[in-house]
Amino acid sequence: MKFPWFKFSGLFFKPVSKAGWLILISGIAYLVYTFINIDSRSHSVSDTLRPFVIQLLIITVLYYLIAWLATRTPK
View 1: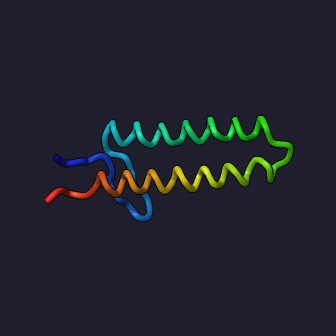
View 2: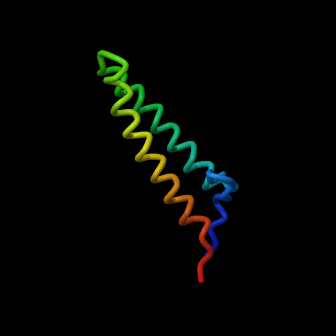
């Protein structure tokens, strides 16, 4: 089964199918939700950014992992 969901271009994986776009939009929506949730409980900029950056890194690594696995061709 082929997974033509993403195309590797430079340093980024660009979505080329509906499934790829769904994964990208879901990740961005989760990051926006996380930012709003963290910001509602924080008292300063550093209280907001430290947890958000950690979430951003985790979501970015997961996106790259899914995109890398989805661009591999099966043997």
